[in-house]
Length: 308
Length: 166
Image 1: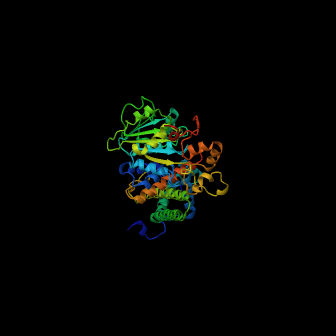
Image 2: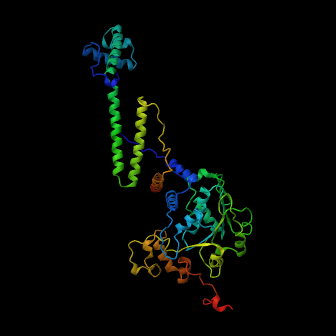
Image 3: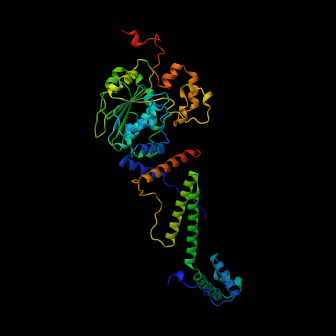
């Protein structure tokens, strides 16, 4: 007897699951993370690699289940901030009815990256896969994407005009070190709690500038009610297997932590980048240590010491 | 009494000599290929009346042969082969350790069941058959079911990525 392969109808299976979760929600963090991994082949790092940092998965879970209202993700370059921001947005939009999100990018390029993570254009991950297309009403535009459940997303570049207008529940600010202070202040008034969805501001940025906006936000986080999610290159690094620690160029900072990692950042890339940049830049941009003092007139200048 | 309970018996072939039986078959073939009675009569050197008589006896001969077919036996043999193939696929599914092989086995099982049901429908043994087997009414409210479905979605997505693009 000749057997023929039949289609299992993967579309039906995914559709059934998706509709179940849209109706009933997720039964806890594990299920949400498993859904993300299955549907988008995206494993959000969960391991607690650096004791003083938070795994990125904790941010996704807290954001989706609204454990926190306002948060700041302070992470390394290439640490997946924009992708996780797009993911948190897409999850809210798909699984929460009438949830509106406005995303402001520090630059046009930054806004474009966020949009591409949703659509899959350019280097974007493509979260709005074919499995979700039936939910999208009309065309998926950066300026306005609306779903059948009346949730919508606006992706704009931060400007005095873009911070005016409607009041969505969720506001996401990407790379705020590039923001103008006044626009940032005006943006704080955008989100409003509506339709049973809590208002929230989520900020994603590295800290490029010694006395920039991100530095201020972090310094005043406790007072402003922001929860800080901080992860460095080791928190998102791929698991280190078969490397000799004693001769590894990352040992100085790693101290064997990458052995417990479960992320996506290539060790080879990290080594190569460490070689190319100064110690200051490495510590600031990749390990999220301290704002870089490069470019200041006096590197040794200390606000506490030298300002009366 | 159903056909499966019919005692085995030899077909009731009309009392015709083997030589004539052979001529009847040949005449039937010639009729099927479009020859006229007169042409066949000329070919065999027999009367046209005899040709017509042979044609009628041929029909009786066919009827006798069809009575010899035990429908239940034929159906039973087919059912047994489907069941055997399904058992083999299930065994392969259970013993497979590679998840891709498991998915392939499951696809085979579904395809096989689909054919099997269509066969049973064609034989009139079951009344209604779906045109296409679909996964419906999955009890997603049960957590282990959801977990298994998510695992399957992950495998499907990985398999889709692994397929070479043209």
